[in-house]
Length: 308
Image 1 (cartoon, helix red, strand yellow):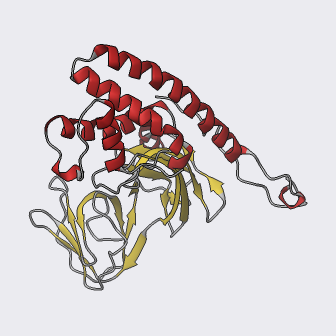
Image 2: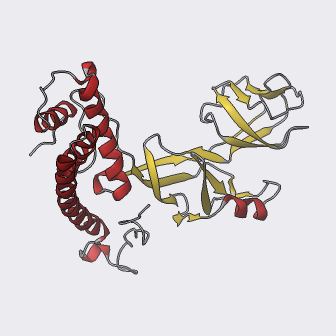
């Protein structure tokens, strides 16, 4: 059975409240528009209930450190760092970066906007004018979470096969008040929408990240939700609950609430079974622990059922 599209979900709800079906969600108005909005609200509600197996995601990224003698510092408004070799392509807007090797600008600054040739700093950061010529190193201290990030499972430094330990930014500050300790990162923390690593990476290490995605907002007729198919009835019933409450059809909303509880219980049971399957390690002899084979990756204890 295929998942219903956004248009099909909308028409399913409309039929159940006695309203005419539509052919395009983009033209929805009035109660129909409210229905389309509540379908997305239902997705968000379900996301807070559980970490669903279909939302699991992984990616890899590299830490960034760049050394060149083509870097200059400009005391302007805002201040900028420029590179005639256009070597800033791996830096990103919003990152904290550490400057070392300069004559007068060894410090930590925040990048407002990043391009290959210019880093524009936040207004609060101040630089001393300095021409190119010195061998200067810029090292990223923070890295943005994915655009669809919902919650972190773990980070692994693939370069040295070490799981990074999650800690607090205050701990990092107390351990390295001058922000000058470098090496292969062993710890991470979340600072807003960025990961901060400790110690500051001294080389281009590869980081593997596992995380839970947030549901994609549905907007076009053919859009399909990324929650597991087991949640489809939950989406429909929660939308019916909300729309009937809006229409003051309280008996109907109560019936939808009861149905939602039944469908949600079933979906949660199925999800937990799928998550348990993700925990199970292969029984094949080539995957045994110890010297006879490789050691499979383990998952944190909260991998399956973190709650809000």
